[in-house]
Image 1 (cartoon, rainbow, N blue to C red):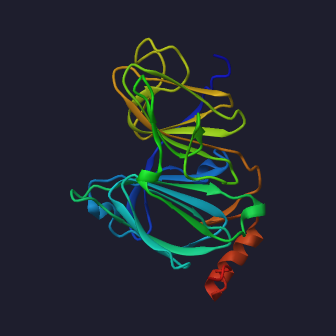
Image 2: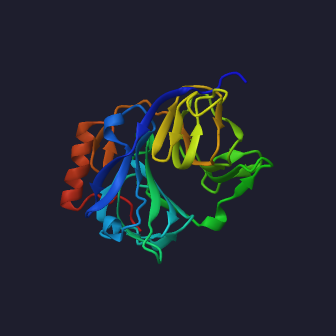
Length: 292
């Protein structure tokens, strides 16, 4: 099959501390700019130790981006300056468009065994959308379609479309795709991608071959494991093969923005002047533009 995407780069998550003392793993962030445009950051906050996550992320501002939180174990309680309040649990997604500005908090809560699992992705907004009204999309697990194929492949569609099945998150400016894919052992999987989009896979279980080669053995090509991210070159198709175990990964793609980035902490704008204005407004109480 022509135009199979090859591996451009492999990234490995690194431990860091955020919020009020949350121990997590950063897959990519500021230092990878603009390699994954339109994506800015991916954090993996899976842990079996409540001391790693229980302090959470108290109230903090965002402007100019979208944050996408996907929980696979435990739950996250949230609240914000728009008076939204709730809990997202296992299998749920919160897709937040910060736009012109929002102040919110996120407090992870593990399951009965103390296990917490989830991922937060930051996506940039183009200059034309950085100051739009903020909004939430809280998506429950039962609202996210899962399709199964005869070869055992299962795909949860958070955003995007496979065949006639669409994910519940639509009308996002960067035209993203967000899939949770599980491939059993000994299976080949081919997926169509938009040729000019940035595409990456973050492995969250098992292992697989992501370079489009014909698998002969584990040593024939890079075996990508849990905690690795594969960034792909341009192309129209993604090809994944498994050997003697399954692989589960998040497949994420989006349309590059190609604009200047000015980023400090939770705010991402296009210029240092806009960044300075944002923090001045936050400090003097003028940050929130949207009126309830």
